[in-house]
Image (cartoon, rainbow, N blue to C red; front, side, top):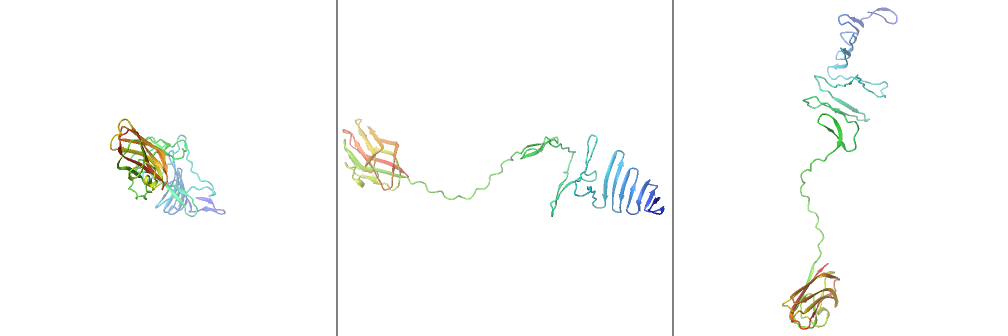
Length: 306
């Protein structure tokens, strides 16, 4: 072919007409060359090639190589934003892969010194799959869900089933000691108490109950502070004749509200009233028998809860 080489006018083997292929060739067909044809523009080397082609209404931009071939789309300058734009009258399609090879999408993450990529690969499919994206970006905590036909939407995440129970943990430390419960019981030491008298006896132990309060002889020393409650009294026989015997708990010789009346019976109790006591104080029983009542033997008990 003839061309202007800047001075002389003549032929050059680097620019030839390929009569058989009906193409203009720049370079040697035996090495690296560029070819301009009616339906393609191609760049060919000994190992790699790139081409812009048209087959009917299908246009292609392709790269081939003996190992890996890379097609680079750069903006000039490189600091700009690169974009691949596919337009169609009805639908624009970007296809990765073909009949002989799977497609793969790799998204590059520029991180300075060490960079990373995110890769999307197809699964082992047995059917064509089409996904339709949601119309918005969803809310925090929502996840993508399919309707079973490929339409994706954002839905609230659901909790999975509870896992199996774990093993038994180590034994915890021992708790504090519980309160000490004291029970005081006193009786008239097997002696009967006459009718129409007032006598006193200690809250704990067997003693003959006497007619006058006399300190430790008629009361018991309480070893713990707490609450005195739950008075129970019992006799060996009914006092008879409808007479009333009254039992009262004393604190430091003073009668308290903890009291019960025994009327023609062998038991009485007061589970309602109570009073506070301090360690070291004296607690006892007072018994008032009605005139004309039957002399009987007596026993009483109270509970002291710290």
